[in-house]
Length: 210
Image (cartoon, rainbow, N blue to C red; front, side, top):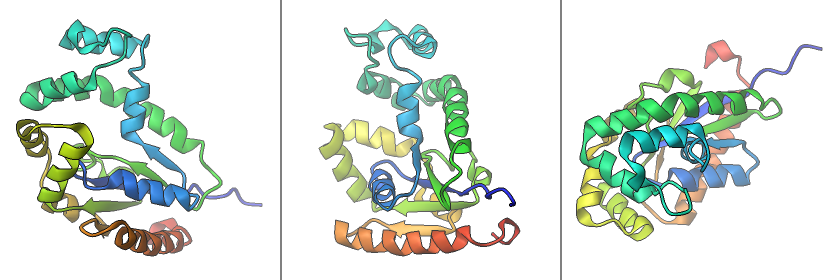
């Protein structure tokens, strides 16, 4: 018996607060393995890890809470205020995030496809890591409203976060599949159902034909 082929690897991306996590959750509800780079990023800087110590050394002990946890809002304010600081943080975290992600993805063998939520897929020029890219697209006004509701960010923080990202056009340009998250949850769920069916079909094709 020939070995089972590796699952189709799908990169899921989109702007901040575009709805990537909701799309990922809906796919996970359908039994799809999901690896979220934001979650992996949290794991690699858990209290006591050498990487967290290096981050605190680089950005100052003030980014740590009293219990040793990373104060993500303080760090976010630093890195989104200065592109050089953001690049420095990515240089520290990105290798560890990718290594853990590859380890987990490589262990998944019993699924037609798996999804890796990669928020900075375009910025990292990482489309080539995936067999197929899905972009979740949303209007900027909706992103702003979601950010303020989700994080309690003020207008200046929101401006900085949106300005730090690549354009919607660039994210759409790398996508083979596009999800328009501009309506209600029911509309999004319908799109995800259709996407799931197409991805299951794509997973059955010979890899060279993708």
